[in-house]
Each structure stands twice: as C-alpha cells, then as structure tokens.
Image (cartoon, rainbow, N blue to C red):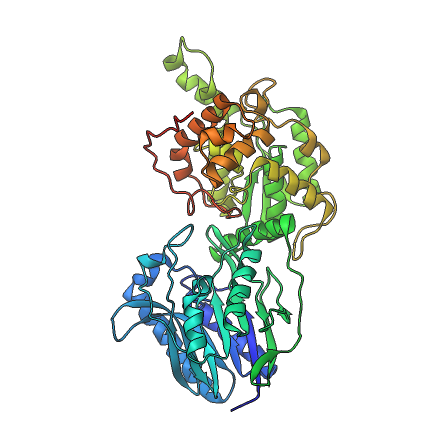
Length: 556
C-alpha cells in the first residue's frame, strides 16, 4: 500500500452532446496531470457527455457513442499514466437501467463503476426522468487506497457517505455538476463540511465549469482535510487542472497545502455568471457574434457591456432604432455607450415602417383611441429589424428585458422580447442598476472589454423610460423599482402569501395588482428566450406555473 498519492482536480468546460470534443478535453487534462506526476485525475459529473444531458441521454445511439468513448479512454490508461475517474451514463447489467455513473479507468480497462444514489428532482433538476438510482456504494480500490466516490447530490444527505465510511473508504472524491446561483458556493461548502465532520474523512470536490443553456457552472473546486481545513481552493469561472499531494499520516490521509484561489462573491460573481452564460451560449452554438438594440436605456447598456466582456467588441453590433419619441438624450447616451465599449454602432430609423403599419391598420382602427397597441408597434418594428440584421449576417439577437419587467408583462412579445438569449433575464431592475455601477468601477476577471466607465453615468441616473409616447416614465404605471422588486421577490422567490407581504408594509391593493400582473404574463414568459439563471428561482427551469391559472390569493 502506498503512503503518497497525487490526485489531480480537473474542472473543465464540456459541451452537452459533444462526446468527441469532451473526450479531447479529458485527454488534454490527463496530459497536464501526467506532466505534474498525478496518479489519478478526478473530473466532474457526466463530464464525458456534458451535464445535464436531459432526454438526449435516452437515445440509444448517444449512449453507444458514450460507452465507446469511455472504452477508448480506458484503453489509453494502459500507458502507465494517470488513472481517471470519469462521469458517464451507464447501463446497469443487473437491472438493465440507465445510471448516472462514475467509472474508474486504470491499467487499460474500466476498473470499477459507481452509481449516483440521490437523483435530484427539484428546482432545475429532473434526473429521475432519465436515470434510475444506484444502490448504496462501497469504496473503489485504487492501488491499495479505498476511495469513496459519492456523486454530487449524494453528499447533500448523510446516508451515502456514512455507508462509504462504514465500508472502509479513506478519501471521498466527489464529482459534481452543481449550477451557480448567488448563494450556492457557501451551501456547497456547508454540505461538504458536514460530511467531513460526520465521517472523519477528507473530501475532494470537483465541479463542472461552463454555460449550458440557462444554467451556468462556476467550478470553484476545493479540498477539505478531515479537520475541515481548506488546503486547496481552485479558481471559479475558469478551467484548471491542479494536482494535489496527499500523504498517509498516522493512518489518515492528509492533503498538503496548495493553491488557494479567491472565489468571487456578490456582484462580481453574478457578473462572471452573466459573461460565461452568454459566451458559452454564443460560442457553443457557433454564432459569429451578437446584435442588440442599444436604446440609451440602462438594460440594453448593461447587456451590451456583458456582451463585449464575454465576446470582445469585434463580435458585438449595437443598433439605435429611433422613433419620434426617442429623446436626443437617449441618442447621445447610446452613442457614448457604444463608443466607450468600442463596438460597431449603426442607426436605423423606424419612422417609415411604423407609419406604414399605422397606415395599413388605419381603416380598421378608425374610431378607436391610441393606446398600447400603437406603442407595441414600435417595439415590434424594432424586433423585426433586429431579426432581419440577424438573418442577413448571422449574429444572434440579444434580448434585454429584466426580471422586473418580465414578471409583470412590461416586455413586448415579438418586440423587445425577440432574440436568442437574454443575459439579464433573471436580474431584477434594482440589481441592473447595481451591476452597472459595479462594472464601471471594475474590469471583470477574464473580460474581453475595456476597463473604466463603459456605461455613461446619465444612463444610470436618468428616470427609466420605454419612450413609446411623449414624456413616458416607467413609474407612471409601476411603483418605484425598489418597492416592485421587493414585492416580486416575495411572490416569486419566496412564494409568500399576500397577507404576509402586506405585513411587511406594502399596500394590499398594490400587492394584489402585482400578483395579478405576474400570473397573466405567464404566456409571455413561456415564449421568452432563455437566459442566465442567477437567483434561487428563475423563470423557466425553476418556477413552472400553468398559463391557464384561475388561482388568486384571496386570504385577508
């Protein structure tokens, strides 16, 4: 039995379904680990196929390709280099069912397989739809060392780790596919510490990196010794292969102190998530760049900054689409923002097409008053023009509605909701303001955009307006955003009763109105573009409400 072990932590950015591309990334990480003298490389959950694969994993052809790739990779470990712990789908021979598995590849073969026990079925997760749970696992024997390999959710409960400790595990190696939200890192560490305290075993936590549709994975892998000290912390938001060094001391494995990266928090972490989510959506779907309407307002300005930081200014095209209600202030603000970001900036007036629609509809609209119909025609005209630019040049349209507006239906379907992806979909308006100020004061790690002030101060300080009629302001028809956002957070994130929200000091009539607007806008949200999940309950994967919904909270 050895008394020294070198374990490499490989947090890489796989793409769901790109098995050959993921295989190449695994090989590259193994090569790095081999140069560092690693004995074993631990990868994230389902790394071979990407996480989450959803129903794609049910296709027999997909599963066959994954197993062929795994067998090829296993054969390559016959070269005497590092062994691998690789997440993969697996058909259980005993049950004939599909499992979420991790395979130990060593000595040219698949030396062992363990299955995930706890399959999450809440929030963004729906694993029981495609996988069946494994039984309680024992440790894997790796060159005389007994390794416990609980998979992701398995360490959020006591039983799997308890079983591994009782059956002789010496180190816990945990592959994870844990998506980001603003509170998640602390929650992960909390659960890991609890399992270490209960079992008395050190723990290695490797998490996936990258954007996958609405989910973003922040990596931030780490090691805990049995005394709950943190000898190694990998960076968040970037790929890394780091070899940790272990020694057997008084019969217990101890990890030597190594890299201790600082993990971003609060607005810095949220901004990193927005960048990565947009970047991976654009690049993994092979768009050459993005186009968006730059109105001179704060939402489109923040989206433009995120896009430039994620992709680089050469891949971002901003378009001002003025109409007679567009103020000269907005025109100059948009131009200043585009200049600060260094992007291509064009102006396409919409007067002719809007008036053309009005003229065509005039016979039918005779005798009616002007209302939101005419306002929405402006927004929808802008959407048509942006989609035409996208069709012509291949750039994906970025849509720019914040969570406050999307919640209450103040975003126009087939208008400003047009687009392929919305980086601020899960940001309330108050958070949009905060992030604009944060970005002006900081250049994010890994940003491809310029430093300094990139969002003109006037965009942040002027009263928000859609500018669809004379002297329009958002707060003509909505409460102040700090009030609106507090009510929405109570209704959406916390599912609070109306009477409990009123008890916080809000007017009952206002709370009921916001509740009503929230419910009747569900049909719009079903047709909205995907966007980065930031909070604990985003629209789409987390919060799933019926469109046809007769319920209203009538309790006093």
